[in-house]
Length: 170
Image (cartoon, rainbow, N blue to C red):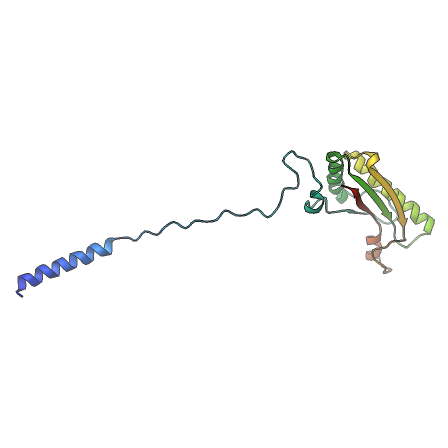
């Protein structure tokens, strides 16, 4: 082979290599999956609570209202909880609640039964103020008879001073 031919072949080879190196390989776009929703809305499309919301809504799942020593006044932190339950009662006229009033072990049996009833009535009034009907509410006092904690300490007594919201009809 002569030099001219080698030069032409070398030039052709270089040109083909140069042409190959300029090509950019395009990759197919990667599809990103849509995020899945894990939470269900607390309120249905029409803005009303349904029975399933009693188990799924974080506000409605809170069903205990705590009280200070020897008091039957609703604490400020319980207002939002009672507003949710009041709306549920408004949205569901067939719903019914029993309000179970409790007291700690201090005081006489009679005094604690009366205090549990006053606490239950305070929660009942708050629920009625938030849209509930008196016919949907029933107050029962257990006084000191059903404690959640049996230690004789301030922390334990605080857990026993409560009203439990129990749905009897959803």
